Image (cartoon, rainbow, N blue to C red; front, side):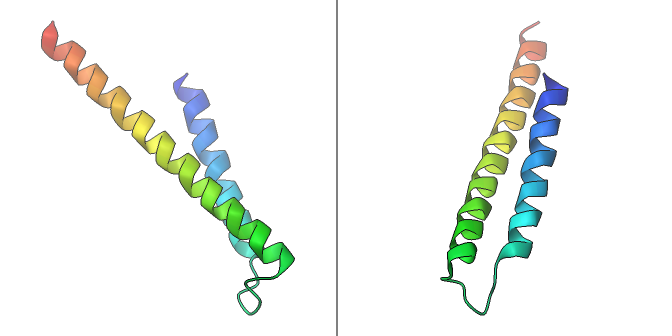
Amino acid sequence: MNIFKSILAVAALGLLIFNLTIIDFSDITGKESIVALIGVVACFCALLLLAILFTSKKIDKKMKEKSN
């Protein structure tokens, strides 16, 4: 499961970088730029959720060690 989460994080980071290269900053409201901006926001959300998941797993592990 840990490998799967890491693969998801790398994929989200790769898609974030890809979408950042597509954005045309001179015409940010253009058709392709809007789609790329939506992709960037989605990647940030995915990375944030994965960071929360990693943190919660660490906290859960520490709580289990503390209770034993």
